[in-house]
Length: 331
Image 1 (tube, rainbow, N blue to C red):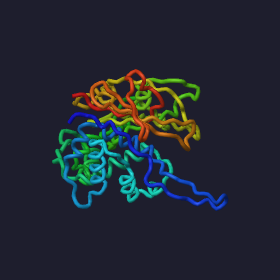
Image 2 (cartoon, rainbow, N blue to C red; image 1 turned 60 degrees about the horizontal axis):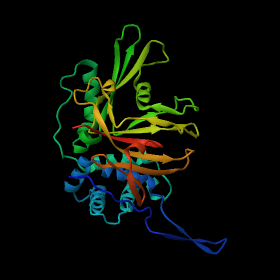
Image 3 (cartoon, rainbow, N blue to C red; image 1 turned 180 degrees about the vertical axis):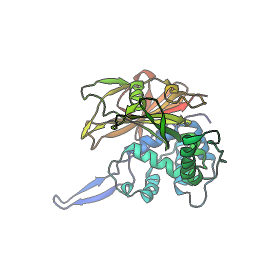
């Protein structure tokens, strides 16, 4: 499937008349959907995911999947499109989406992916991937297997979006393994609160090094270390720019091609990824702001999407106000 999808998304559900009894006038209010528009734009431009969504057959109660499929078809056919029906299905999962105010794009994406995961069960066969492990590692992975894979892991969504983080606790003096935990993720959250407020820019790899470096525990005898145990097809990175009540407006330097092997030493697959989407957030506060997106639409062609407005973007001009990056594993 050739990637095109060069279509903006409207930023309204239906205009609502709100009567202002103080001034006896009518205010026209529209839903704030920029967080959802930018998220859906980036997801729709993930070629393998979009192709799968358009070709899967929903079951009777797969309501979010059906609405996503309908929206992708509208976008693909360049029809006027709105995410309002997806918003309606999300409101059934979380009451926050009943309101028309701003929400966090990262929280929307994580919940959206998890629901599509649940609605697409039995699209893959499970393979026992912990049979080669031993001792504490085998016990820890067995817990994850029962908790996640057997309950909701039988979906192609796991291969596309879900990775595994592995956290070890070891003794400082002799490196003896004390405990192991495995955690699923569909978005890698990288906090920036460790940065000085006066910091103007930082490299993505420096943020990753801080996140994955060994950290001594308060007992003075042990340390924790986290690695990426399993890499997904699409790696979504969220930069948590909140620091108390401040928003860290720091430039993040990243590459169009990244090698994540230093953070996933036990992963036998490829670690090279290429950038395919960006969600921008323009704000100087943690309370409000505006989301927009830049997506790769095929080859070296990039488009900027600001709700219904879209325009071609030069590859050299993308680095600005990033809050979420979408990477695709190189073929």
